[in-house]
Length: 270
Image (cartoon, rainbow, N blue to C red; front, side):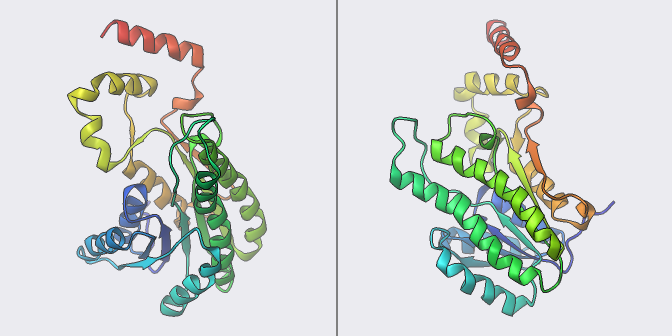
């Protein structure tokens, strides 16, 4: 069955690079008019040019997700231009990587504001427009860090975990307006900008551990996330709402002590 977004208007936050850019590319190729919403004007404009140069409809629009008071104007401008908003992908992230003892209030607020707070208030404003057409899709890009302890920051865990709960809440409350809400929880994803280093000889030991951790022996890519996002935001997934899709090739469902032995054996045997 063909997946198409023809005629749809999609806003994707944090789409100037990485997973967000891949989602924007897939959506545009599938017929959507795409708005790349990002604080980085240089990379955001460049990303829009790359997609537009292929003959697709894509534009860049600057947004500072740490300032929710600007969201109403941001959404209104898009709605006035396109006369509809069909899809919102809350993908942006911010903040540094800190441990338990190093996490600080500045990083905590930046991370939670951009990842979680903005996702709600941007969704709130978009839902007001979607409800006029009695349809729409919101997709939150969470993380396995939302359900498991990882090396990421405490603030990142709190924000991504919050996104999962927010997904369920919005799916119920926005369902009355014909709006579906889901989330994707990526596991280990090698983004395009990191592929060269990940595949390098200098990184072979680390890569061996990561690939052993993956039951299928392969790590995820940006496109894996984008393909899942495309399906969930299409009419093919019309009866899926309130769900959180773990996208990690079964890595996180493994029994941990057995996995440790597997990794030890792999390292021992080279």
